[in-house]
Image (cartoon, rainbow, N blue to C red):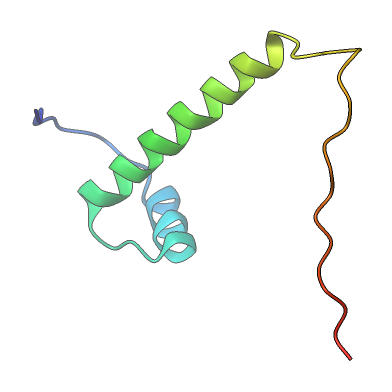
Length: 68
């Protein structure tokens, strides 16, 4: 589902976002920004929940094979 809307966007923000992402189409750029914002806020929520396990053991580390 898509919703058409009119936005007033800061030209400098749009220019910087386009340069950093390489995305030139406005709609694609806004979709990317919204997805990233949602992911960021969800991660902050997980961090706020704590996520501590004092009795947890550290996982095994993968070691790369030595090259000769």
